[in-house]
Length: 142
Image 1: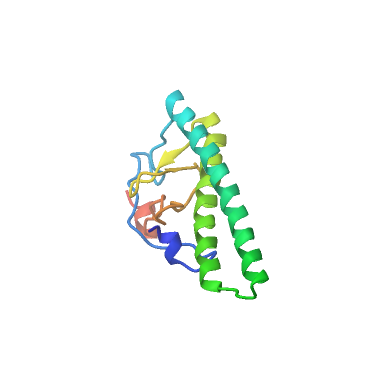
Image 2: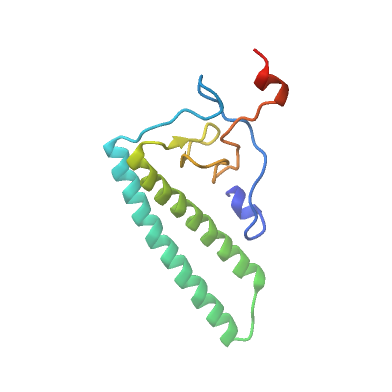
């Protein structure tokens, strides 16, 4: 079960281990996708898009059926909404990576290995920080 499924709807994970940095500083090393990886990402985006649409459809139908029967079960709705939220977050990240891949500025999380966009601060999957913070006294010291 994903970290997102254990959090309240809309909550963001915090914590995790530090990602390694490149020799030049605080950013993780950039990883450029090969043409095969791009095709895989595009296929993954299409699969996720279809899954998100199906999950939305099913959630709407479930709410309708519960309302018709006058038996709303919030815990079931929250569980289904969390599943939809997780799929939608992954779809958003894959779409962002595909957009940024045109400039070859995407990377992978050092903790869980999922791809992330260049502007990401935390991994969308595990919540690990993608940038390493350093204490103020070490920045000026040489």
